[in-house]
Image (tube, rainbow, N blue to C red; front, side, top):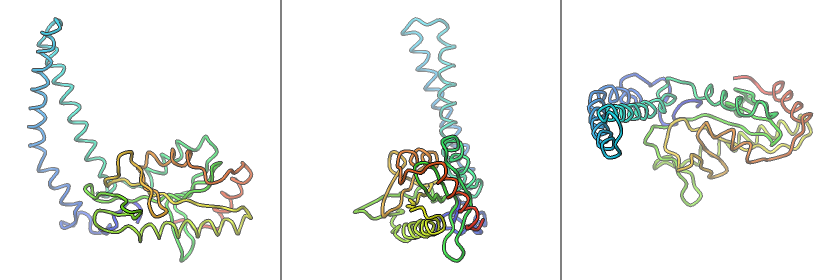
Length: 254
C-alpha cells in the first residue's frame, strides 16, 4: 500500500487506537521534557564555550559561551525535528509516492531517464513508479513501517521486526516480472526489471540499503543513485522512447 504500513490500515490512522495516533500523542506530551533537556544541554554548551574561550584567550568569553550554548540548542532542536519529520509518511501527513517521484525526477531526469507514476496491469499488479532509462528498467514502490521496526536480512531471508518479509518480496518480484513480460511482448525489447521499495519510515541497516529475496529496500534519497549504479541493461534513446510510450499506452494509471 503506497505510503502506508503493512501492519496498519490507512483508515485507522488518528482514530484513537492506531500506533500513529499514540505516537503523536506521546510526542506532544513529551514536548516539555524535551525542552528541559535542550536547556540543560545548552547550559553545558555555554559553560564549555566559556571555559574554552578562557583557555585560548578569546575575547568576551561570556559571549563565546552564549554562542556555543545557542549552537548546541539549535542542533538538538534540529535533530529532534528531523526524527519526527521522518515519520510523516507513516503518520499519514505526507505522501511517499510524491516525495520519491520528485527525488527520482530531480536526479534522473537530465540523464535520459523517464519516470511514470502510478501504473498498473489490470487484475495483476500496480506500482508507484516505473523508471526507464539508459541503465534499464526499474519499478519503485513506497512503504512505511513504524519507527522501531527493524528491517533486516538473516540467512538470506527478509524480516520486518519479527515477521517474515517473504510475502512482500514475492509481491514485488512478481510485479516486476509481470511488467517486464508486458513491455517485452509489446516492444520486442528484452526487458529485465528490478524491484525497489523506498522505505520512508523504519530501521534499515547502516548505509540505508538492504537487498534480500530479490528485493532491494532503501531510503528514498538513495533510490536514484542505486538505479544509476546498478545497470540491468544498456538502452539507447530510441528504445527508451519506445518503452516509455508503450508503458504509457498499455498500462493503466492509478
